[in-house]
Length: 101
Image (cartoon, rainbow, N blue to C red; front, side):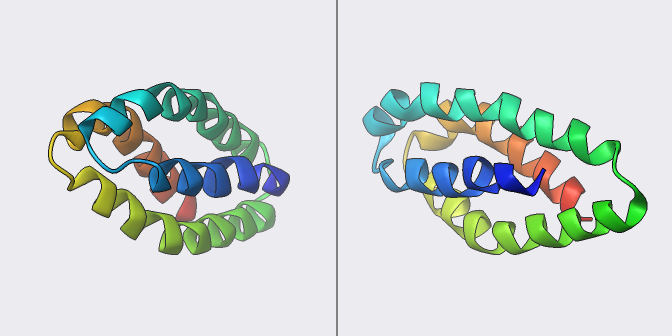
C-alpha cells in the first residue's frame, strides 16, 4: 500500500507544479484524472488492513498531505483553475484526508 505513495503524492505534487493558469490546468486535467483510480485503490487496500497497519498508513498519508495540501490550495486559487481541476482534485484530497484520520 505504501509503495503507491509516489503515485499519490509525488506525481500529484509534480503535476501541480506545471499548473500556472487555466490553460495549463486544462492541459494537466487528464493527468489529475488518472490519479483518481490510484487514490481509490489506496482507500480500498487500506480498508482491508489490520487497524495497526491502517494507523501507519494514516500517519503516512497525513505527512504527505502536509506537503501536498498547501500546493493544491495555491494551485486551486489561481484564476480559472478551481473550475477546471476542483471537481477532480477536491474529492481526491477529501479521500486522502479521511485516510489520514
